Length: 101
Image 1 (cartoon, rainbow, N blue to C red):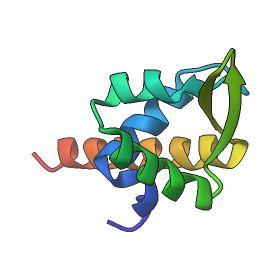
Image 2: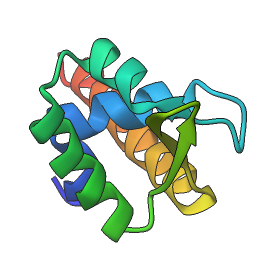
Image 3: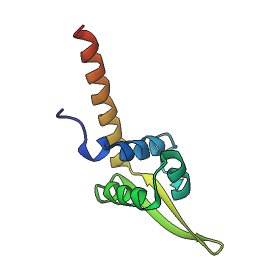
């Protein structure tokens, strides 16, 4: 399946990127919201966000709100482009399989 992005294709990372791409450009989601949307554990989600961050697909900002730490994850322009290409490739696969019948 050449053309599919191995970093994005993993199911949890795909859910993270889909959620972030549903947001306006430069808007992010708090870690807790991503955790709720994906059903992931803290550690699992953190590891996958780290993978996406190392690939340049997301930016991670850490701040304090009151006395509580808050992590916000935002899709980068590179991440949005990679996600769009990945979705386009999935759509091509779907369309091609429909032509096979």
